[in-house]
Amino acid sequence: MVAVVVPFAAIVLLFPVALVLLVVSLVGLMAQDRGPAAFVASGRAFEVPARLWVSMLPLLWMTFGSVQVGRVLRPGRGGAWVDRLSFGDVLLLASYAVLVGLWLVFALRRRSVALTPEGITRWGPLGRVEIPWAAVAPAQQALVSHFLARWLHLAVAPGGVRRRGFVPYVDELPLQELDVDGRFLGDAIEFYVRHPERRAAIGSAEEHRRLFAELAEWYAAARPVGGRVGR
Figure 1 (cartoon, rainbow, N blue to C red):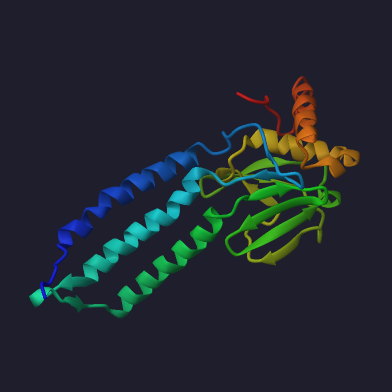
Figure 2: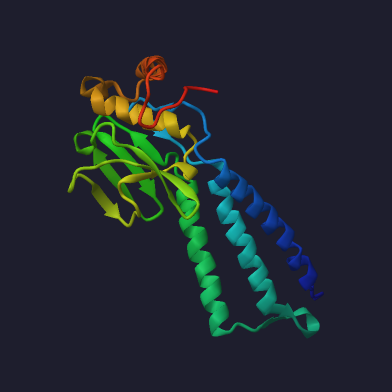
């Protein structure tokens, strides 16, 4: 039987791939809240999908994990792989596996945030948050920053958030992860906070067109999180 030896240098070539993915991810982070001024009308909710760069993060961690495996498993005599795993290597590879799993779960979700007739739902890798419309105070939204990323802060009444699992910043929406214009999202939330009679129609294509048209009129006046619709 002929033994096939994979050169360690071939695995090291994965480093440029990791750097490219890292640059693309950082560019996506810097382009936060510059998505389209539109939702995905699913019929039952206005959904906001995750950005494309979010789905690239699992590839980044998988590349780092492959490089780590190549560092500790080298071909020995006769083409057999030699196991040189230390306790630190095991912990590092296990952390890669956990990170890849969490980000894959997040990236494969069809939606990241959704506006429903009942309120606002936000999903994360380890749970979700539900905020009823009645718990959101009007005209008190604000853009805040956490670790160079921008979030849309909502003024939520104490006890108004229902959390399942672990989700950080339960009263904020991560704009850097959402494929939507941040100002459009903020004004849409403000609109439904002020107009409860319109919430039952959330999710329909007709309501989406009406929302777009009416928000265009809002921008003639100063908005708490205002801006123009579209590009």
